[in-house]
Amino acid sequence: MTEELREFERHNKAPRAFLVFFFALIAWGVYYIARYTPEISGWSQYRVLEKETADARKAAPAGAMRENPYEMDPKAIVEGRVIFGENCSGCHGKDLKGGVGPDLTAHLKYGESDDKKYETIAGGRPNGMPSFEAQLGRERIWKVLAYVDSVRERGAKP
Image (cartoon, rainbow, N blue to C red; front, side):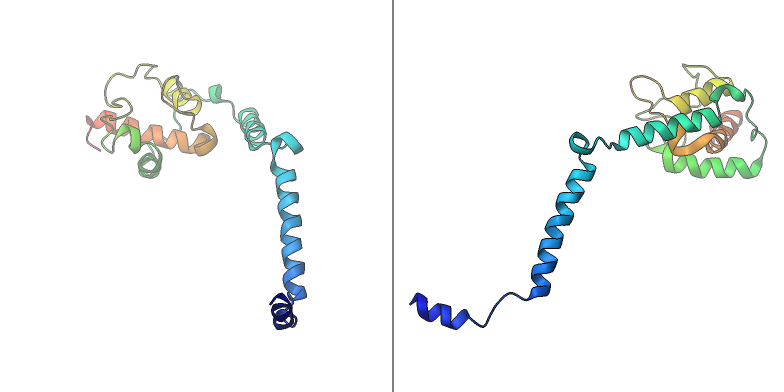
């Protein structure tokens, strides 16, 4: 029976293109694992992120500005509202009244001056507030603060 089966399957050999593709895929997989496994290659996305964040801090230190440059800019306030909706409203609510995060229309625990609010967003705070400096950048953080301040001045009506 096995002789009949061999005779039947003799003409059904694997195509060369398939074999080349198969072994190339195996070689690529080995390369990928060796290249991107930190224990083997030493490469780490965390190191890349740390370097980019350090470069950004050198270029624009957080303490360089004490006053919000976009405080009275209506265009920046609208842009800040969009940025807030995308990044902050999940924790602070669309109306800034809180939820997971604190109410931004009330007294702020870490300070209410522009530089303190910037520091909180850029660097984050323990037990909940993540850092947004790498994600948003300096200009966008100031625009979010312009929006938050405009809502605080109007009496919490976004």
